[in-house]
Image 1 (cartoon, chains in turn orange, purple):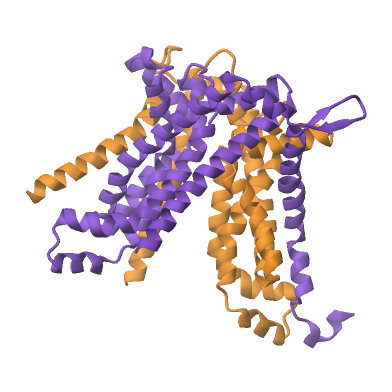
Image 2 (spheres, rainbow over the protein chains, first blue to last red; image 1 turned 60 degrees about the horizontal axis):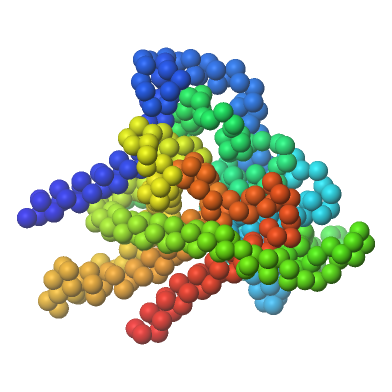
Length: 261
Length: 273
């Protein structure tokens, strides 16, 4: 009876995982297809990988996606963390108002945020391009940084920063040597969220980028349909993500074991 | 001057407020002003080159347009179906994961969330590929769209439910067992009520993006027209800022109403206990 139940639960999870990975395997397999077809197998070939690296359009879009994601992460983590620290000491009314506005892009549909930013740039006659895309990414990443870091800052013992001051630390030193190490984990979590969101964003970029492109915009605006080069690109992204995820899994196991010891 | 005397070297409230100022600039210019602009465009009308007047015209215009209402209802219908399907397959997934040992749990959660890191457009395109292989005639149907959305949004349902379920104190199960409850009763009386918060946050996290997606109807719906696409058209193709803004406002209000409704369910639950 118990083994039957076990079997059922294992196969259920198996089916769900198959559902999660079927499309990904299909992408990978057809990236090695000799044919141009995305559905008919015509033998093994690496030609789509060559084409991928030859395509300046795709490469520019990939690089732009990464550059924007890195910059948006750095900027939003920096200003978001400072804001979280500052908010934890502000007056209640001010704090409530700020955190309320902070929630707007989180609860609003992405497309409404996108439309608002588009109107902003159009109304102030700012030419849309990479800069406006970056500004938009900062605008939607920072609120997530604030809600990730703020609870951690709030739970800190305020006496520690004061003690550092009493011992002669400058405000910057107190921040860097006392506050920062205590909230480091939350900051890294915030950075991971910001990076992922920026890297994966489509809707907001699409409305704010004008003629500039990132990978999502490139894919969405493809006129002639999808080519296997896109499968090759996704395979590379999947391999990189796979390596990162495995590394993180192994590392978290190590940490657990250390804790037990 | 101030810095010469160590005792005055405190992190004063004013310094701290200054630290937040870059962020307040972002909040004001990139979040608040865009919101005000949406309202402005939606409620105004250009009279001539110089004057702009307040008007409800755009709202009146689309209330008289049956196609708009139909698109709106269509989007909400598909989003609700998607949410129900993700709930029905996501809840057991989260539940069964909590039943395995700690190490397996971490691995399974990682495996469920890892696909989220692949660009959403690529994942949707992959489904298009699969449908073309299996049965191309399904493309364009509700089934194809819902499958794609369930696929993309499943982690948003599994994660919050898993988080809540994994935090339930095992002593509660023991207690239920001691009091003579069978497995099913324990589930009904202990697990389910305690997991409602996770379920509701899962529901909002799926419903919201599912109602407004642009990508999935385009690829899996053979250019099926949903509310997201309607806004895209008004803004990027027609350049009709006012009309697009009005639709965005209606959409926000509908979504907000749905979110408040789900939150209410949670509060009632809390009040009863």
